[in-house]
Every structure is written in structure tokens, then in C-alpha cells.
Length: 376
Ligand code: AMP
Image 1 (cartoon, helix red, strand yellow):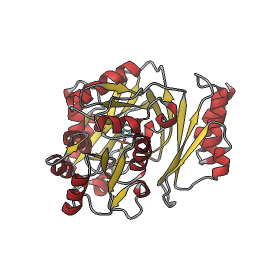
Image 2: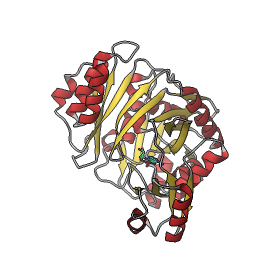
Image 3: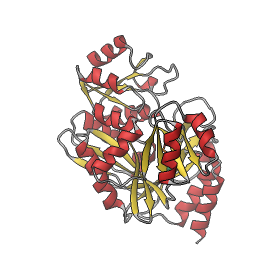
Image 4: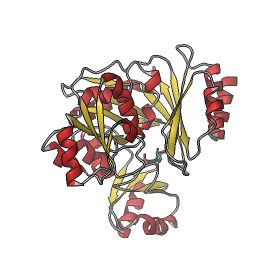
């Protein structure tokens, strides 16, 4: 089976790693010369909307997919006219526009933070009047890893926020004083079969995911599954999808979807019977879905900006580093480490090992929290 992927970053790399044992071959369309997936297949180093490259990809591939959310939805539509492309273009278009995304949640009765569209400075002050402060102002498109958004704490912040973000369509959201950030990753086949992974508890700093913990048996699992199933069906989805959620005292609120494999599911490579990557490939290529159940509790720590010493990482029992082969740069995801537990539960020993990994990656605050938990 030949798989064409739009994008050539670490998600494409891990898809190709998961597909190799299934005998799959890969072609990546990615404008970056440094695409880290490139050694695992053919690399078309062109823009996503390059007609010649798109034509080459569609002629070669049995099926096409994407790992990058900002691929123009129109490109997917062009490809879809000639070849099978999953997930569907509509899922990508919904995910690319925060307003459309929230309206989709509304139509499926999936609760979200209160929100309103903002297209002018006047509308911004009206929206703040309605939603109150604090609130989060976000660009409707192109945002990721906390980029394209700002928290408004007081009236005086409105002008600078407008000067920074205004001029493009915006959305204002009520600030959610969440208890936890969670995500659920699910997969759907073309036949409509669906499977969910157990919830991930996600910890961010500066808008970037630092730590994801698998949370098997979480009391919110059923609610999260109900919400993600509604999305999968409504979007006639094929492939892996992530739904990011806030846990509040009133239950779960949907923040956003990612119509692709997701950073908060990387623990599934070692932690689940069949990883999110393999299941995405199974879904898009028409194979039966694999078992999403947890083999052992797992956590994932991102390696961001700078790579810690590999000897120190591998010295932690149960740690599995994944180094993507990208050059170091502040804020850049260079790799991740999965930590698996020895037994069926997260225990003090696991928390101690996790704390050492977090220290190695410079996440001192999270490390201290884990140390406290392991001592309790
Ligand atoms: P996003 O790009 O929407 O995923 O936002 C990045 C991060 O900003 C989230 O993971 C949250 O930590 C925070 N955030 C986003 N929206 C809100 C909100 N409405 N209330 C509180 N925090 C938020």
C-alpha cells in the first residue's frame, strides 16, 4: 500500500515508522528541505498547492492523508477529486476555523466555553461586555501551540490585544478556570467502526504541551467518548482525530479538534496495543482497526528546544526516547520520551521516574509536583 502524506514533520515520521511493518511505502509533500520524515520515503520538496507535485503524489499513492493542519482545505479537495483522501476535507475545514469548530460543537450539543466572533474593535468591546473578563482573544485561523491568542485580563488590555491580533477574523472566548486539560483520541474506519483511546491528561507551559499522562478508568472517559463519537459520525470521519477538552466543575467543555494524529497520543506507541499512528494508517487504507486498549499506564514528556543527554534519558527505567532528527531551536518539538509503568497502575516509582525525566527536560515545576505525589 502506497501512502501519500501532506506534511513531512515528526507526525509523518511516526506514521511511516508505524507503517513500515505493514509493508507500507510513503511519499511526503512538504515544502521544508529539513522535513524529518524524508529519510523514510520519497520527499517532494514543494509547496502544498504545487500542481505538479500534487499530480505526482496522487498518481503514485493509493491513498492520501495529512499530518499538518494548515494544509489549505482546497488542496485536499483537489486531491480528493482524483484519489482517496482521508480524513475528509470538511473535517480539516472545520478544524481550521475556530468559529466553525465551535458552531459544530454547538450543533452536536457538545458544551464549549462561551464565545463570540469579533471582526472589529467595536465588536471586541461589545464581546467583552457580554462575556466579561478575563477572556481569551484568538485568531480564527492559523493558531497553534498558543500562537495567535492572548488573554485579556482588564479593559486596558483590549487596545494592545487588538493591535496585536486585529485585522483578521477573531473569536473571543470566556476564560475557563479549568481543573484539568484532557484530550481524547479516537479513530474511525470508512465502514464506520470506531475505537477510542483512554483519556490523556495534558500539561502545557507557554501554550506548548509538556507532559501527557494516559488516564485509564478516568470518570470522564464515557462523557468524552460520547462527544468524540458525535464528531466522528457528523464529519463522516476516517482516520485518527483528537478532541481537546477542559475539565470544569460543570463537566467537560470542548476546546478544539485536531483532524490528525496528535501529540497527546504519542504515549500510545508503547502504551497501547495499537498506536494512534498505526490505527490512522489502518483506517485510511481500509484495514480493520487495531486494539486501542492500554497495555500499561504511560506518560509522554516532550523534548522542546534543546535535547537532553541521551545517556541520561535512557538510564531511566521504562523510558523510550523518540528523537525526530530536527535541529535545536527555542520552542521547537525535537522529540519525546514515553515512560511506561511496570505494573497495571501509576505508582510512586513511576512518579519518581517521571519526575527525573521532567527534570532532565527542564520542567522543574511539573517535576516537583510528581515528586510530591510520589512521596504522598
Ligand atoms: P488552543 O490553541 O485553543 O489549544 O489554546 C492553547 C492553550 O491555551 C490551551 O491548551 C489552554 O491551556 C489555553 N486556553 C485556550 N483557550 C482557553 C480558554 N477559553 N480558557 C482558558 N484557557 C484557555
